[in-house]
Length: 394
Image (cartoon, rainbow, N blue to C red; front, side, top):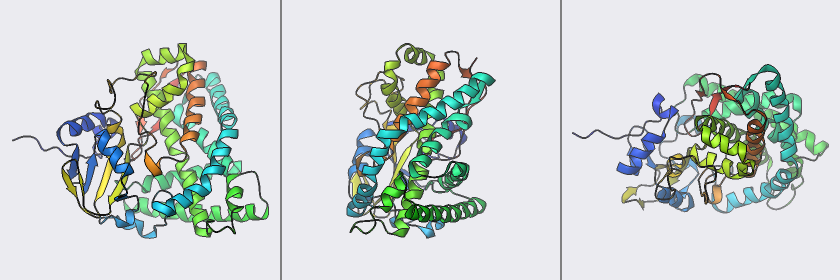
C-alpha cells in the first residue's frame, strides 16, 4: 500500500526544513486535504496566487467553522477584513506610513546596526537574532509610532507574546493562552495611554498622524485606532527578524553566494529579494472559503480553512528556474515573501530597508563571519524565524 501523505508542521524535521515536504505535496497532492489539521494546503504557485486574489475567500477567521476558542475576543483589523472596510483601514494608514518609511528608516536602522556590530567587533561575536535582528525592527517601528525608548523592551515582550498565540495553525496550551490575554490587556492599556498623550501633545509620529484624521468621515474610532497601533507594532517586527536571520543563515550555508555579495555589493537589493524567496519568514497565508469553490480539481466548502504555502510556491519549478538554487542575482523574482493582492504586507518597504542595512553592513564589516553554534528555530508555524543564531566575526 502506498504511504499516506499528510501535512504535519509540528514534526521537528518539518519545522526545521519544510521544503522537502512541500516538494512532495506539490508533486503528489498540490491541493491537499489535511484531516489532521482540518484544512486545505496549497503548494503550487498558480493556486496560491489565485487564492490570494479571489474574493470568494476571506481573511475573516470568524467564518472558519473550526475557529479556536481563544479567538472569542476577536477584533477586526487590517489582517482580518476585506472589501471596502479593508480599503478604508489601509488607506488611512498607508500614506503617513509610506512617507515615514521613505524619510527616516535607513538612518534609524543604521544607528542600531552600527551599535550592534561595534560591540560584536569588540567581543568577537554576537547572537544575530538577540543582538541585532530583533532590535532593528523594534527600534524602527517603535520610533515610527512614537513609543518612548525606555518602553521598547516592554513593547517587544508584548509583541512576541501576541505573535506566538495568534498563529491559527498552532494549538496553544492554557498557560500560553493566559499569557497572551494578559499581554494583550497590558499592551492595549499602554497603547491607550500613549494615544491619550499624543492627543494632548502631538508629535512627529504615526500615532499623531492617525489622531489628526479624527473627525473625518472615514476616521478610525477609538478601538480601531488601538487595534491598528497594536497590529503595526506586531506586524512590524517578526517579518524583519525572520528575514535577517533566515537570510544570513542561508548565506552562511551558501559560501559562494556570500562571497558573490561581498564582491558585488550592488547585488544587495536583489539579494534581499532572493533571500525572501528562498526561505521566507512568512511561510503561509490563511483564508476561509465564503462559498463552494473548485480549486485544482477539488471542492472546497464554505467555512473551510485554506492555507497558501507561500514557501512552497516560492520554490515551484513551474514559475522559478532551478528553484532550490540560491541565486542572489535572480531576475525576475515574483516571490510571495510579502503576500500578494489587497492583503500584501503593508510593512514590506520597512522590512526591505531594514534587511538591506543589516545584511549589507554585516557582510561588509565581517568578511570572516561564521557560525559559532547551532541555529535555534522558533515554535511558530505561520512565521519561519530563528530565536538564536550565534556568529563568530573574527
